[in-house]
Image (cartoon, rainbow, N blue to C red; front, side):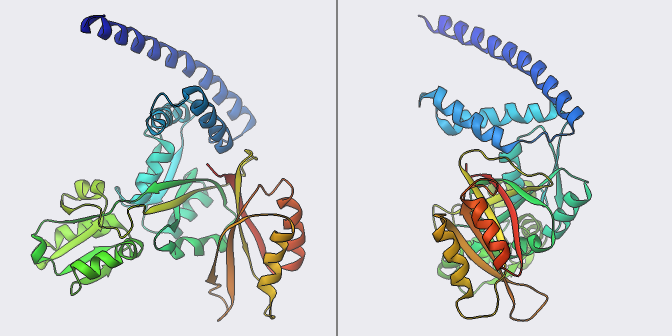
Length: 354
């Protein structure tokens, strides 16, 4: 075929795609009406997980998987809108890694609301001002996000989904690199770039901020005083800063795990993770005893961490991620045993591993 004939065929297929999307929207609207009548949630993570698996099987490796899933992310986002719309909270301002994770998870067709702190984001979901919140909980380089994890101890909200975002930090400023006297960023990002900062700016003041976006805006305002920031290229663009150097994180594989918090539970998908919070008695070997329960039930532990209770000095809460769904054996049986053993035991949510 000639070039023009090939293009004509592509145009015809594009017209068919749009027509099919329009037909799809009529069914989506019907789904939305049923969900509204049943007062069931618009966002169904286990359904999305199943759909992604089917798409990848149908694709059979022909199209780039990341690109195919990105296309369908926007199609699903349009579905959210057609079914009634959703409101999503994230740690702001606009341009933070949390904002980018929210966009990656929910697409462009939902409403996003920035909040100044994790506490405010949790509170907004609890009050029903927004439907869900997107919260960072763990970084592959710098560990758990302690400020976020502390919020789970005193909430009834559930983790209903997760996503992983590749984090590529940039040095940004409106001054020359040699003029930098202070670098601003979120504590997690400063930690992710710790070795790079020691090597390249060992004498520069490092200033923790509430978010990378807040750091970028301050760096612009304080440019004459030698201010720079660390964050994403999107943050630099929004704040009006120049990217001086890209990929300044210590590890090329630097990734942050985010969770979606809401008021709903998530049904089993067949490949699930469960997050649990618990305390143990102040006796020798008590933590080992708890971990033994998981071993005895054949349950894999992905990670474990601890945080001070903030109520009693030297008292700790343990946070653990394990394989399985809380409503399915063997994890269901293990949870029953642990509730009788632990002074405090709380399942924070079960959700698709994907």
